[in-house]
Image (tube, rainbow, N blue to C red; front, side):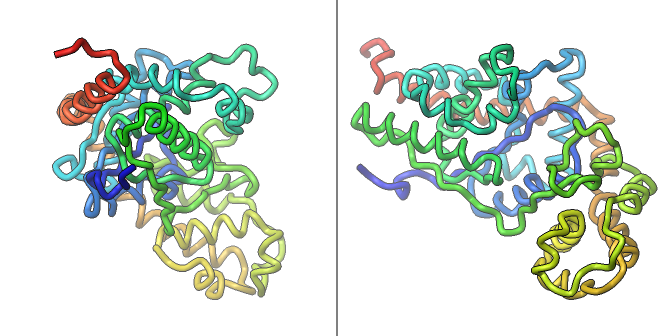
Length: 340
């Protein structure tokens, strides 16, 4: 078997258009996509097929897809350098996913902790798609023979599944069709937590609007949300050891470090022993400085939905050129093509 050196360096990642992108989406994912386009052939996908594993209002889905595309571009992803596209417009994702469903094992999917977390006690009534979407995620990667995938903590297990599927497919058909996708653990990627509860991930589904900073929030809204962020009555501690029991303080310092691309410990040293009001005052300026240009550009871009749809359509055609060739090779290997 040959190695990944036989494949072009290609990166694939995606964001679901479920509406309402927030600071956690930006610092944890989108911000870190930008430098990748200088090192890899890059494909950034609006993964609407993943989004519909839970109910989406059909009339709103297109505007949500355009919002993700706008966030990509406003954050610095250049459609002239990278392929920015719409997953559902490249049918090869689904065609390969069925073949991979026949390669993946039930036991592998049963171990997926994210399905258990999302389904909870209601797993008998959730969609089949929510159970099988890690296979579609593997297909997203494999249909472009992506060699690298940026992953956060909550996606590591899904990438491991994709690697298992690659290995089994290549072994079953005795041909090195797919590269083994390598994780890109972004050093600057930050796990951003709720401003109201430092033990929970920032989420648009949280009942409190003050738990999250949206990419489209005004400067005043950002300021209010940071001022109201939960903190301790005592000042910031004097040691990192003490900070371990202060999740909300850790979260604010993490946001600061991620926005400024600074080392977390250096940021902590700057504020240790100081009052939270001082940290919050500086953090407000930093977050506004980081997000306001992105917000303004997103508002400008989303006002021209036709332009964003053209970007996605053009990118989808470029993605389809790659996917068509890969699927043809897979059909040949599996025995699904007619003999020429």
